[in-house]
Length: 415
Image 1 (tube, rainbow, N blue to C red):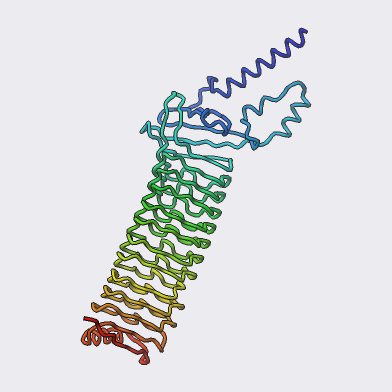
Image 2: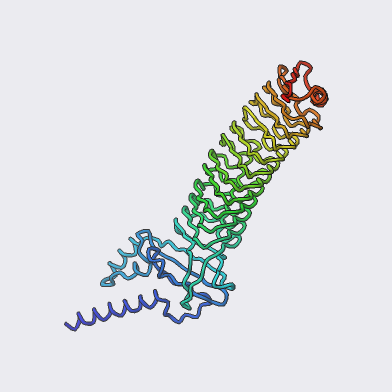
């Protein structure tokens, strides 16, 4: 009876000690203290505060049990301890550090994790029992991660800083919170296994190279609040085959979708007013492009080396820049809208199978050198214009250097 009482006393003392450690009640004088808890009970995870910094630690093994819980194995014999140790599973640990200097809104400054799944929380309860709102993720917070496959960003985050998750080579799936408005430059670039991104409805701006070089990404669907896509935002996404653009985009910057060789069709929204240089350069399987009716400028090399087969330039376009549709070897039919005034040098150069060109503009004032150089020798231009205008436009086009065999036909204007 006395032995049993002593054994029970030892077990009770061990349980009290484990509870004290898990509750952060020790008096260890660390600058930044952490609290460990199972990921299945995230509401119990408390961020420890030191000055303007708060650190939150979540730790669990692969079975979902907390590391502190799994350490309370029976100590009846040394052999049992040895067996328990050999069968233990390495703990998955996530440490998130926050800047709380602008509380109650706080920002993530660093994330370190060995887990496969990480969620940036909506709120964090501090060791002072206050609730903090996680509203931003700072630059380079999580770059070069190897273990995390699944990332979910909380619904209070509004800004993701530059290079925040860049070169996270293990990352496969990202879900952005419903309030994310700005995705910074290079935020998810070089995530070579990233194949799925869910964009929230609040995204407005996508920065330079934000999703560049993500060769496994297959689909992008942007919401109706996106107004601007930065330079090279989705460049070199070789597997990207589906692209949906929202109704509020006014500018797509240079090289935004360059070398996305699996992309087959694009519908540009009515809100788009300017397409910058090289946006779809090198998209060799892009066969179909539909323009909105507000675009006025199509930039240099915007569609160079694409697979477009038929092209209608809307009436809103005034300028077609240099080499815009150069080396579109499969282009056979082209219609120029009524607003086109200037066609820059080399604009359609090398489109060797272009045989039908319909010109609906009566305002053509400039055609650059070799704008139609290298098109089919059997090409025919049909120009809808009064006779004086017809003659002037034929002279402009011929002066750009065309094969002598090209035919010009005037279509009478209906008055």
